[in-house]
Image (cartoon, rainbow, N blue to C red):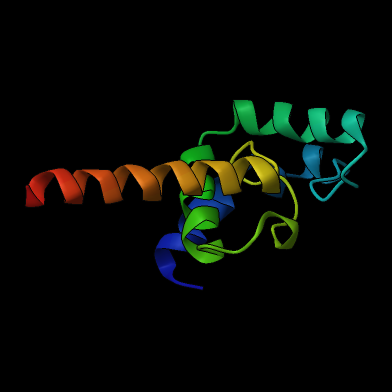
Length: 98
């Protein structure tokens, strides 16, 4: 783990004692646990760093291989976000090439 990663992960709410009982890896159909984890992320000061790290490390992995709540998003939501970002970058490159 790099020093930059260690710095933001230490500030993440999910790493703090009051939130250690929250399930950040709920079953896909467990809406209550998912909502609870997402609510913690909504208040987290480093949710953007967390989401950026998730998107970077998961890359183009299919949604069923993305586990847990990271940056306030489920695996399927992170996959959709990754797809949007990569499609927008592709369109921008194509427009610039014209």
